[in-house]
Image (cartoon, rainbow, N blue to C red; front, side, top):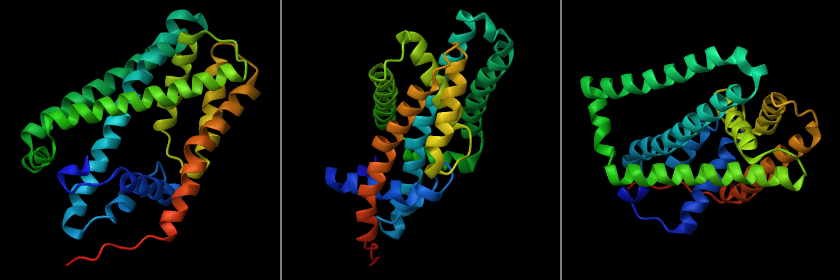
Length: 235
């Protein structure tokens, strides 16, 4: 995404991603990541870097919302015990769709929002959306395969419905990244209990291992780049 600003190597991109992950350790919903990545660029580029980072996270959230809503809507159709949730789930889904429609309308009507459009290139948007979708497939199936390793007896479609629902619920709850494992663990136990699954140890073990592989280890690697970070000097 930052190629429109300046070219970066794979190693440089990885360094920025890992160090910003470490920076976001004590910020709600990893908001510290925005400022951390911008520090790697000159002052005149930082606003654009902030926006590009926002755009990437927006697409990831969009994928999480859409697939999460599909997962939540799947559950009541197959489990009578969830009928009481159907109405409010439909309301939430409709509210999200209306919000996106209104946002699209406002961008066309409000002048200052039109300035945002210069950052958006159709080809780039499609690529980022595709990457966000592929990333979601990777970590959701990583969760599923870990469940299989821990011998959780659950059908694939049921497991994916629970996993996507868990990520949706966890994404809308403000929480320090450091305690992300506790949030996802409690939400996972809650969601899987909808299916009558009461063996919580394998689920909590899966969530913990996911946190170690995808957050703790990368944050530890990123700490090296944080300690050796040298601010960009503006000319």
